[in-house]
Length: 401
Image (cartoon, rainbow, N blue to C red; front, side, top):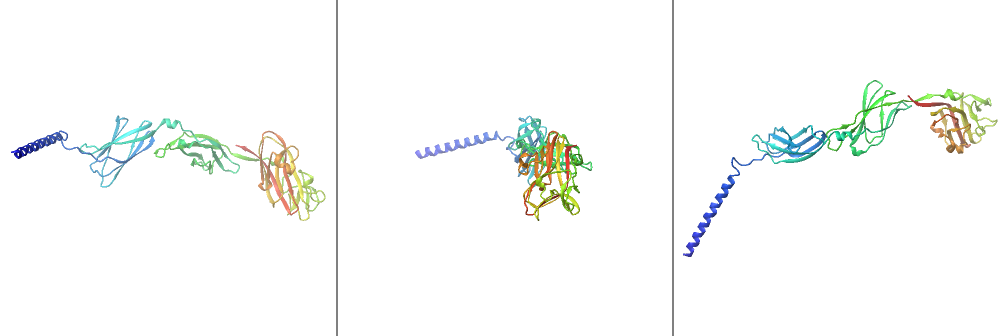
């Protein structure tokens, strides 16, 4: 009897479980009325590249062949665009510009859809947009100097810039000697720009280029600035201020054979190391040259000074030696000093307005006001066979045009 009651109880419990299961199935049917939920495959590998009031959205459509469109939302779902999608048998790519965006950080939400209106799970991405606020913060790269030198080369020297602005280059437009417009781009790492065949004494236009970040699709530029580029010229003023400048040099006192003094130049006792009070002039190869020589029977030449004293107006000057023949050794200076004499050779480096080694073949100096100066040579050489022979000299006043 007891066994019968347990069997009956078990049967009742089984019936109740079956009824409960049927009720749960009926509850599930409420959520799938009209069919089961279907999701499309989402867009994959999304990247958003920054730009000027726009972004570029790149992505991939992978496995789902049913995708027919992509909808992109931004501005808290207030703005959107639908992009048609045509699937192929392979991986398909998206490259889409979203235009007319507000400057700043933008949040994007993306869904794919099929023809039945089924959509994917959302994809969230953030992008940055640059606009007028960024542009107004930009400035042109400053120029240190821009000129056409006396050698005919037009050169721009640039100052540095803060790299955090995204600056990467500067563009220069100019007119060449064929009246063609030429554009030269100079990287920010370069401190100078050479303008080949520049039309002298004309204008350049320049602007600076920026990329605000490493993924920017747009280059930002400052407005063009126009600047006049002067020509640096050498005006030959030799005949105005100097006498007896060579090719050939004229002789003053002369031994009638080879040696003498240079006419119109002051020569001190140290320069006259040749018997008879001669020195500074040599008749060499049929031409008179300005000469310093010691050795081959001639004594050492100690503190030899040969110069002219002249009055020069304020300006930038270049004193040039032409056709110089010399060896090395001793102290050999070109110098200019205030007053009626050159300093002694031992004092030239400390007491001159400017000085250079004769081997440089030129001396550049600047006078800020009119001055009486002595311009010439200071030499000390020993009797080991040292010499300096100069065929001519020129004086140039340098100016901008």
